[in-house]
Every structure is written in structure tokens, then in C-alpha cells.
Amino acid sequence: MVSIKYPALILLSTSLIVASPAHADNSSGIDKAGDILSFAIPAAAYGSTYYMDDKEGRQQFYYSFATNVAATYALKTVIDKERPDGSDDDSFPSGHTSRAFQGASFIHKRYGLKYSIPAYIGAGFVAYSRVDADEHDTADVLAGAALGVASSMYFTKSYYDDQLHIAPNLSPDYYGLSVHYNF
Image (cartoon, rainbow, N blue to C red):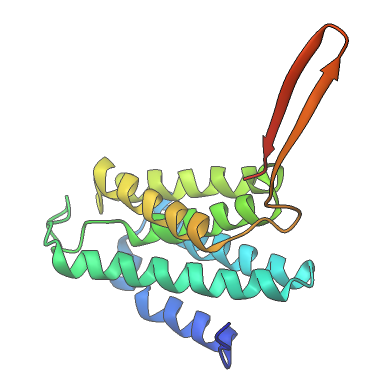
């Protein structure tokens, strides 16, 4: 496995580079809350790896986060879709939404659905805030959410058990097979 030096610095600097403060002075409370949550959710996901003393999960988070940021901004460069407010042509996909859903789905895949529900609610709010701010339309935020979820689902393994379990169910009147997979 590739070792990354100074991963927290890389994570922070990448987040600062991709932040978009251009509309900060004209933001509503909803927009500002969405901006904050778009960084807070992946930060909480990253922090959870320290809370769980989970070095393997931290490495998976780095790959997932970096892939998500790279894919999102590569698509923004290749696809020139104008924002609904007409400010520029970087509308597709929503970077805020992809970051938020990457963090939420990392928590889901690594530690379980019950821990990720608040993060998913927050990520949904981020998506709503981007449409409300007239920065994106529904297709932009759906694409951002899909990118965020896909990057985490691809690079992240369950902390507990990511194996397929198949067990026979045998009784005098019943023969069956039980299949269980944690994802």
C-alpha cells in the first residue's frame, strides 16, 4: 500500500484549494450552512478514523477523498455547463455535494448505516443549499452525490466485516440457504 506523507496537510490544502469563496459576501444563512457542512461532513468522517484508531480506514479515506476531488474537478473542466446564476461554467457536477456525500458514504461503508444517517441528512441539506443558492440545478447535485458515494463505496471496506456469509438452514421440514453480505 502506498504511504502518504503528511496526509492531514494534503487533505486540508486540497479542501482549501477547491473551496469557492466567490459568493461568500452575498450568501444567505442556508448557503453558508451548506458551505460549512460540505467541509464538516468529510472532516467528521476523517476524524472518525482517529476516534476509532483506524489507520486502514484513514488510508481508505485518503484515496476516496482524493479520487472524489480529482474526478469532480476533472468533470468541471471537461464539461462547460453554465451555472443557473450565470456566474461561470463550472456547474457540473456540484463539488460541495460530492464532498458532503463522500464523507457521509465513507462513514456508512466503513462504520455502518446507523452512524451515517446524520451525515446523509447533512449532505442532502448541502445539495438543497446549492440549488437554493442558484449555483446548481438538480442534475448537478445528483451527479455530485453520485460521485461522492461512488468514490467511497469503491475505496472503502467495512471496519467490521466485509465478507459474504453463506450458511445452510436445515431442519426436518425445511432445507434452505442463508446469504448475508454487509455493505
